[in-house]
Image 1 (cartoon, rainbow, N blue to C red):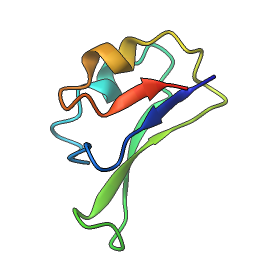
Image 2 (image 1 turned 180 degrees about the horizontal axis):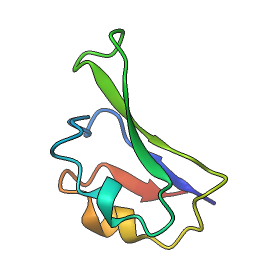
Image 3 (image 1 turned 90 degrees about the vertical axis):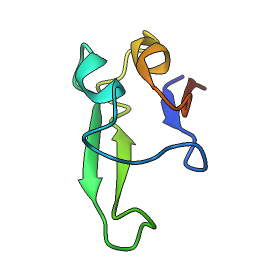
Length: 67
């Protein structure tokens, strides 16, 4: 299992994302992507994610879950 981003709920803004700084393993990051509607996306590194759920609790848009 790993954390996943629910794209339809995610505002995908580096400045707004509470999950990035909350992750104790630095598994959450922002990537600029001009092909995305808001110019970027939130990524989860499944190699670093240990399923702790901290990102899920920190996400202000309720756009993350553990699957």
